[in-house]
Image (cartoon, rainbow, N blue to C red; front, side, top):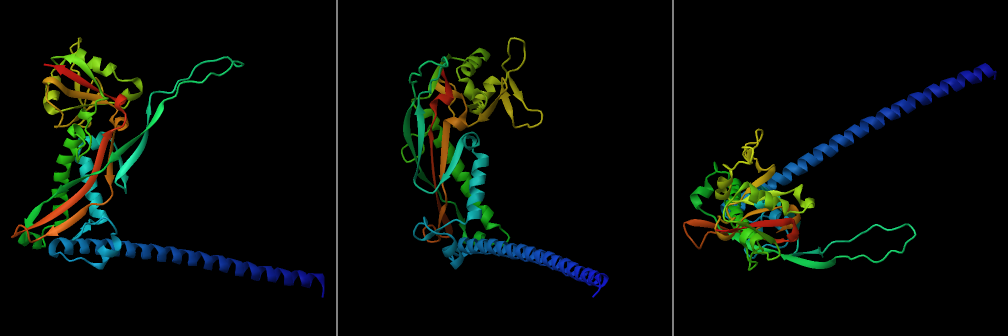
Length: 353
């Protein structure tokens, strides 16, 4: 066989192999696309099925008291006898609603746990450092003492009720109805405890911590008094600081002017609900005390560093159609805790009226 014939055969073989390779690449590409489509539609179907099944199971439980296999299999542990753990989507809706409406939850740090308490390590003091020559001995420096602080969760309950005829009305979104009632109840009780709680079956409130420094400011709110309060806060906390007060205290500040005649209170032009004093944001909480004798009516601080809120995952729900006929009660239990974890990050104004 001549060399030219061999070259021709080799060329034909290469062409065949190239075609087969291209075909295989195309097949692999098509198979990849099919696999992606199968994965997408499979997940979409499963997710939609699970969500629809969850909604249907919850709807049947609220309206008729029917417990399904879906609830039994999907929600494990923690439910009280005769009740169930609220489905994850409804539980998240309730927590999100509480976070949005609670002033303290908007400024404090929040952590979700699965146990009855959270142990955290806090520093009692500050690290000390210093300058020294390159060839000099390094003496020991003072270090803070590490202390363990335990924040317990406490049970908070709500018990909305409705007639069976309202519950049976298919036009009413029963899930939204229940969520709104629980959010309203939990927000009021929680936020009061985060401010004034004494730790007895409830969180420890800001006002009850003896380690938070109270600055004597006299009898009236003045620009000078507020500047004094601001300047007592360490620089490290001032960058993320907020004022905390009730609306009555704020109204006494809104008309105050500095020495140049400018109002010290300002409202944001782009976000009407945002307001500040000397550029520091203001958070309004109705549970902060009115100005009076020895009142701690104004707080300033980096509350995310100062106060921690803990939520235990899951909300229990018991349906009770018997106790208060013709009403059906929905007894819901949520577990929450809170405490000051860094007293140095907050200062109170203590009035002497």
